[in-house]
Length: 148
Image (cartoon, rainbow, N blue to C red; front, side, top):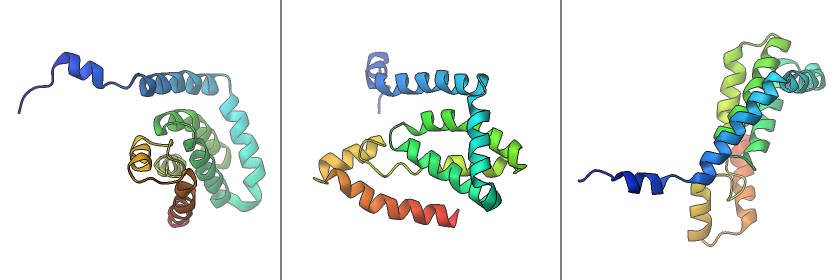
């Protein structure tokens, strides 16, 4: 076994992923500092109030999974974290409950082949159709959400 050279390490960095994360950090900071998160959380809590805490947690899960279709999990967490914190304060939910839902939802990136790197590798190697991921992934996501 040998050491990885500096050039090999630098070449292994995927600039697109880094830029997505950096961009999400900026947007996440803006969402938090401009009180957009509080407005989104208030709207979500008002909409789901008739269903109580389970309704709010379900809405956070669905929103996190939906964002995961388009964004990398790190970006989803950065974007949804302030919304989860605001929702927890608004509905007097323990913060760890909303954050657990956020982490579980962010891990459910299985609806499209572009949601996650390994999905893309399986997509090309297995000759899958784009819709195959949604067909199988939606059932798995519903099962994970129901257990959570």
